[in-house]
Length: 236
Image (cartoon, rainbow, N blue to C red; front, side, top):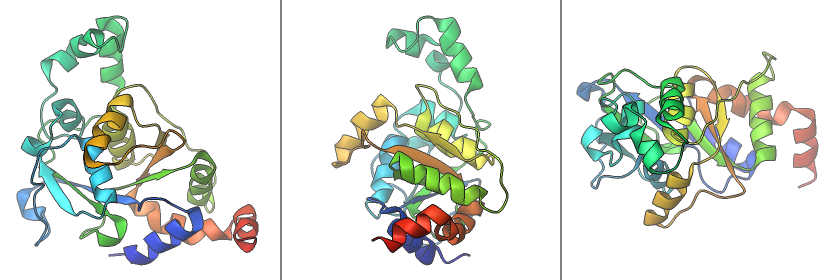
């Protein structure tokens, strides 16, 4: 395993993060749960689990511990609920104008096969018991650009973003990077509301980044090699 304590310290200090990066692993089999990691006591929305991990907690959650099945479905823990599949859920909430456009949104959403994931395992990056599949970071837009720049520093190119209204933390920021694509998005309204249940909020001024776990070390190594970031750090 990489030195995730060192990586977290480097990123937190360089970016001025308010909360630690969250390490997320999508566990395929019960036997793959690391020894000593306990299951989440009370069911939570996945958005809330992310914030809970930012408080320092290490835990795994099976399908029955995910309060919101549409998020669990995106993550591959279960089948898509019927009202999600038909678009009824979104039209009943006035999220979309018709079942047609709601269905289109769900079909275009990144989603893993039902039953392909046994549990989600979340922790602060420095406490991760395994190499994470995804690292999720909450920061301000200008620091998000620095993360993107660090990811491209040695390879060049562009990052193609994907954003919609629903399924942002689960599909856009976990499944999409799990499939190999870094993504920048914004917490949806439901995420903001449910996070308050544990005394935290997704910042109105912040954005979220879902990063493939395999490149987080490269980002940490590169981020203070970039010219304008060097200058910013020198002025501190």
